[in-house]
Length: 175
Image 1 (cartoon, rainbow, N blue to C red):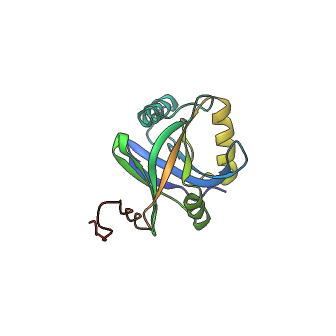
Image 2 (image 1 turned 90 degrees about the horizontal axis):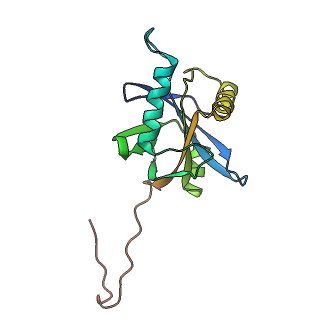
Image 3 (image 1 turned 90 degrees about the vertical axis):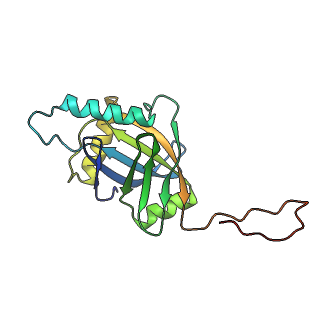
C-alpha cells in the first residue's frame, strides 16, 4: 500500500512522491518510488504541458520505458535515522521520500529501489486503489519510465580500511 504523498518543489511545479513495497519480476520484494506531477493548477496548464515537463524530468534522470533495459541511477537513495532522501545529482535536487519502517528495513536488506516516473498527473489525495489504477493505465499507455537506484545507509559508519602488508600492522584513523 503506497504511503501518503509528499510534495516537493522540483522544476517549475511540485512533485508527488509515493513509496511502497512491491515485487520484482522474479517475485522478490523491492521498494518502489513513484514520482508524479499533481494535476495542473492553472487554467493555462494543459495535460500536454504536464506530460512534456515530466518527459523532460525523466529524460534528465536517464529513465527508460519498461520494455528497455533498466536505467541504473547509482547509489542515490540514502536511508538515515530520519527521512529517506532521493538525491538526483543530474538535476541537482534532493527529494525527501515518505517512508514507513518496513519500507526502510527493506531498503537496508535489499539496497536498491525501483524509481518510477509517471508522465501524467496524479491527484494529491489519490488512494492506494487509485494509484494502482494510475500505474496500470500509465503502463498500458506507455506513460511510465523506470530506473533502479542503489541505497546508501548513512546510519552506519563506513567500514574501516583493512591494513595492508608493509604498513607495520599499526592502526590509523581517517577523518
